[in-house]
Length: 524
Ligand code: SF4
Ligand code: SF4
Image (cartoon, rainbow, N blue to C red):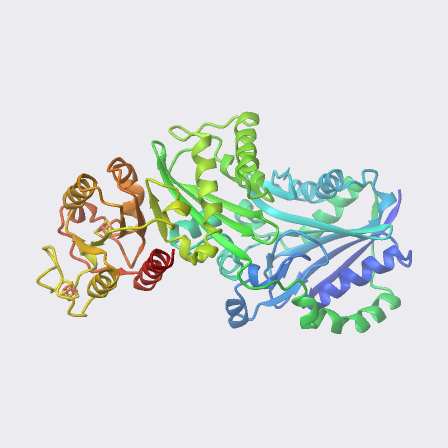
């Protein structure tokens, strides 16, 4: 049986670990060392971006800096990962001829077998999930990636042992717009680790032994423990400064603003669906997707698989629809009250939000704008005659709180909004209840109004989108700040015009939007 070297390089800094990857791969490509399996760990914890990624698109740099987390760049492609002190890395550095199937897809599957065997030995039933993950019941426990140099390749994976998911979520720019509790919870549900699966944490000696046996079985080899050669040691000393340098770490720095995290939310008979996408604007690709909601899906992993299928899909309508349709025709998925087209429409709406920049709206601002009756691109080119404002943003002690109107006394954001509207010829109306809103829309329709700009919370828009559409008056709604009546379970009070908490308008975004529309009207 062929003997391979087993290296355990223990805890190292991110730069040292990245240098070791480079040196060992180089030495293997030059036939200076045998095929090698390496175990690696990180101290301090580290965020590692994929070779082609832009750090500023992927990492919350101020957060990692303030929390003693290192940042570095891998030799391998793929997405950004967080390596805490508990995670265990594994790597295969070998000549291409040593593994029968050397095209990447077959290789990924074969390389993951060692870890699958190891997890089974530890008592965890895991499976390979295309394109490159190992999962337990749909939850990721190991992500993998690879690269090649000459006749050698490096294939690597992270095994989550007792994972700090909270820090991972905060360190990486995963497609979560507001880091709200529900979204955090749903991101937590997408990963697992050895400790959560077993209810206890085996020692690293046991885990490494299981991995050793797992790789021996999968690759039909015998692993012999050894250390770095003198040549490798020497090269590590020489190359370490390169992997510590900003030039390496910030290698593929693209102009700011190329990354976009966009989202869309919609109500279906089956429940609410929220789609969040991280989009690579340069490559025009969906980098990752997060789909959440309160609807039922069977099997429960269906959404995770749909998210995986959307990864790297071009941001084009035909291709997005094709991926969604293929997913639902080739998988047995049941989602009562939710149709495949609901997903396709929301994905397209989210993708569209990354394209308002020429109209003066950034993608993060676009996430707070909701269209009524028309496509947003058309609405942003339209003209309007009313500004509808919610009474919940009025000062609680104001005499106008429970009646229409405002004296523009300057004590709340409603006064400012009235001034902005009047300055460009819009008629402001403070909406005092749901009934008042419906009456106002009816009046606008009967008077041939061009449409309205309005402010309301996202929850109101989602719940009442159908009624707003049925009123047949075009409009753009802008999200508001703060806790809403829905968050407080007071929506019935609010419906009747009796909600006793003050919210705040997004006055900057409102002002920007009104300026854009006014400017377009006067110049165009
Ligand atoms: S700005 Fe208008 S709504 Fe606000 S406190 Fe003054 S009068 Fe009342
Ligand atoms: S639904 Fe509640 S929080 Fe939202 S705009 Fe209306 S009153 Fe304000």
